[in-house]
Length: 219
Image (cartoon, rainbow, N blue to C red; front, top):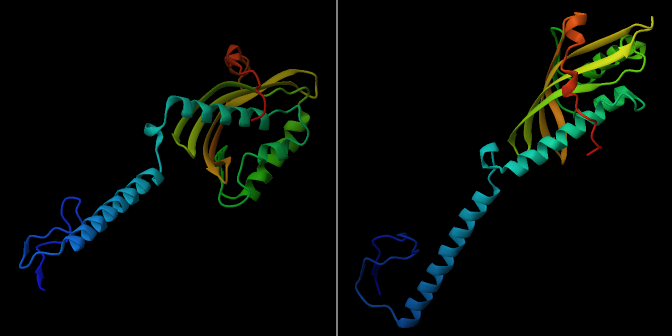
């Protein structure tokens, strides 16, 4: 028995017969219909799985999802910059990935590796941080844009009131922009830029202290 097929795929049916010289037995037609149905369901399932597994972006996320991520990042940062806890360098370095490239720009200097970044943070703490008496890190603003379920960017301003070794009140501060990525279930900073406020006492003492964020519990 010879069959001529005009095409094998057409409008959801795996087998569409345009012309037949001889009719097929009823059992054979039923079997072909079953195969066609199963193939169609498998195709739909494959397409659905592809759509379900495709990465989402920020426009496809709900406001509640974005808020949850933003709150998590804020708590994470506030905890890492809590100067009342021991080993500040270790706490600050906990924000960054343990391997891979980390881009950090500060004071016109750019570093690209974790060891270079850690060296810079250690230098800051050795020459500045340890000389501050009763320092308190205050976040005057935190702005988070969630770009995807695993990516976000935060731009914040901060001030650190303290007492100098000479017993004089002093404030340092600035702005910090950080790009976060979720890796292995953990949020880490992969790029950042810090900008210090100019050493003007009038500017330093008026960095919106009324906007200070109350430290939140650890995530």
